[in-house]
Amino acid sequence: MLDVCNVLHCLVYIIYTMLSTLTKVAVNKMSYQQNFAPPSGGYPPQGAPAGGYPPQGAPAGGYPPQGAPAGGYPPQGAPAGGYPPQGAPAGGYPPQGAPASGYPPQGAPASGYPPQGAPASGYPPQGAPAGGYPPQGAPAGQPSGDAASAPEEVENYAPSDTTGLQSYDGYGQVGFQAGEFLPPPPPPSYESDAPPLMEFGTAASITDEEARAAMLEHVSQHCCYGKGAAEQMTITNITPSNALHYTLETFCEGRTTARVEVPYFGDAVDGPFNGPPPAPWNIICNPAQQFANNAYKLPVPHTEEVRVCGMCIGCGFVRCRQCGGIGRRSCTSCGGRGQHVRHEDGRRHHERCHFCHGSGRSNCMRCHGNGRVKCPHCKGAGRVKNFIEMTISFKNYVTDFILEETDMPDELVRGVRGVEVFNQSLPQVWPITTFPVRAINDNSVRLVEAAKRAHPIERQLNQRQILRAVPVTEVDYKFKDKTTRYWVYGMERQVHAPDYPQQCCCGCTIL
Ligand SMILES: [Zn+2]
Ligand SMILES: [Zn+2]
Ligand SMILES: [Zn+2]
Image 1: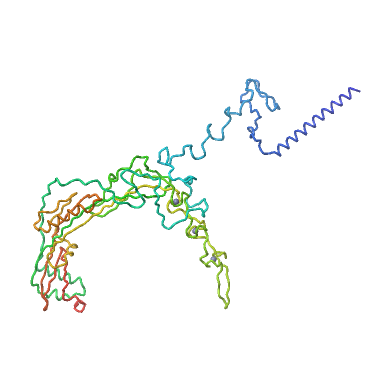
Image 2 (image 1 turned 45 degrees about the vertical axis):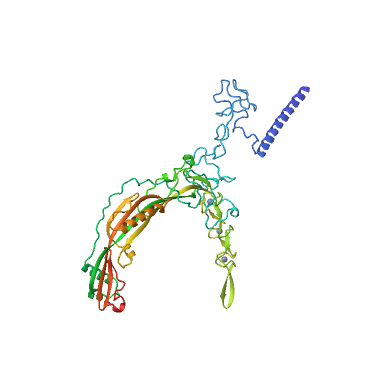
């Protein structure tokens, strides 16, 4: 009987143990499902036991038997802590894709990337805002800040602050306004040379018939002049002469500098790290044409510096000046009333404005409602490239002297062709001293000497002197009872006839 009791007791105990184990498994499973969040240490490698899998190709001892305890039996010869997960280094993997020592913050190496073309040490942080530069390549025109905090847009922004910018030998303090001419190196001396031999050509004169033909041509060009006088006049005297026209041209070059800023989008920079800039007069620039006015602008090498845009303080946009940064303006269709008034059948009808949907406000057309616009100075880049720009001005200074002995106005000689008696071009000409007419010699000396002192801060490149003989023929004639004169001048045979008798339309026979 006692045996039966013992057996029964044993059975009851076994059943109880089995039931309680099943209940525990169910409860554990439930709690696992309820607490879905991974444990703070993270999950162990998927499917692996806490101690990790034994290495593939387990030793002869074979795999631990199925249902082995959580720690697993260490296989024979395996380290006590078990093998780490398959293929992983002993220390475990560092964060995904990172080297053992870890990457520096994304996108920027510890020392910072040098900008394109810049030295490894990067740009000096001159003038950089505490917040740093806006991210490079940020799409322009997509503002990311608050319009109200953006700098105010101004009509004409001109940078003026040169704080932090480098200065260079030979250039002085360069501001944003063009400065004085940079003093040129002293000119070479020509005094020791002997003056070249000067030979002079001969002038031209005209005949009686040529003088009359010139007058007829002159009259035909004026439709209201009567040509009768020209045809019937009696030429009583012809006095040929030559006016002398001496011209001295002095071709000079002047150089000025000014600071210039252009938007900087990350292109190459030629800064002071490339060496000192060449001296102002060592920069080579050849004019396209001698004895002609010309101007060129060149960047001075090695003076480029990147800095924050002074207009938008680096953010790439400025507050819209049209709407003051609000983005909305009074509706232009309804004048801000939100409605239109229509008169019909002697009554007033109020209609909601379709344009602004009755609000009386509409989006600012300039900023499209954003309240800000792309910074016009840096074109949204946030940064500008500042450099010294050299303006090279080639100027041809002309002085002249006219020797004209008739009563015709002297200045008429300037505009017509003549015969070139002398033409000389040299870096520095010798004044004419051996021409048979003394007034020419005297005035050549006077003008050449004056030119030497006239442009002290420009470099004289070339000089040219031309002496022309311009034919001027005085013609005395009689028409009806009137005795008067006219002049035929220049190779074109222009006529100067202030007293021509038939200038009025009343005497016009062509009409
Ligand atoms: Zn409206
Ligand atoms: Zn606006
Ligand atoms: Zn800007």
